[in-house]
Image 1 (tube, one colour):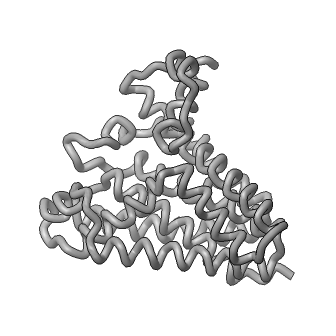
Image 2 (tube, rainbow, N blue to C red):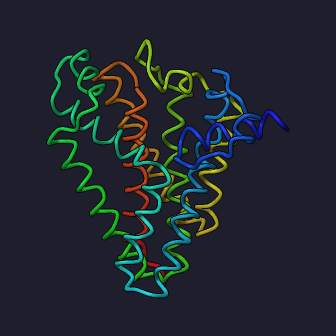
Image 3 (cartoon, one colour):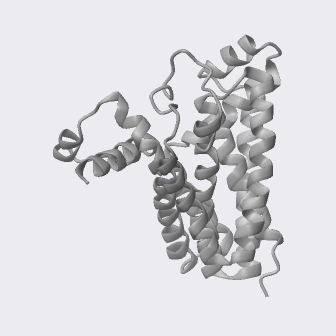
Length: 258
């Protein structure tokens, strides 16, 4: 039990900017295998981020317009994660858009600078999230908007983490290397539960539709990553998470709630 708590806190420290108290951080410690064990908690951390974003959205909804409330909720999630996944999206769009050979793609992806392709991708992704969430709030109401927000953060990270079970990490070294080891079966099942159960709470039919869409997106992304670079990188997981989150919002915005 103590080890599992260590892995959860390691995931919280790796995937967010939430600071751990010094005494708690000392108790957790660090070992390379912690990061791989922590990978199964990625979707659970996503649910926590979603809850924080939903709470800020709910509070802001009491004072300002739905549009402003959604932006503030999004800002909260960005602050919590340090735009970790959005950065992966930008790096991937720059690399896949600007490189032809696999080595060129990986070199551009490793560059910390954001190019025009990446900047446009971030702007478009944030604008689309904002408008889709506002649309969900207008069509379904605040409660369902908050439920979709929380579920999307968990399910999108679940979809991203499944690549650890089926695809190869292509860098010899990298920040994601300790994380990117093969997931054990029960770890994968735990991650899937964190992603699917919140969707089911919204609606079984909605959950089935969202899972179907995410499955199709995953198949396409997996084939694309293999074709372009032979596998995935940490940035690819960030891109997958962002596209999965957007996909869930697209389904929710098109859903007939009443």
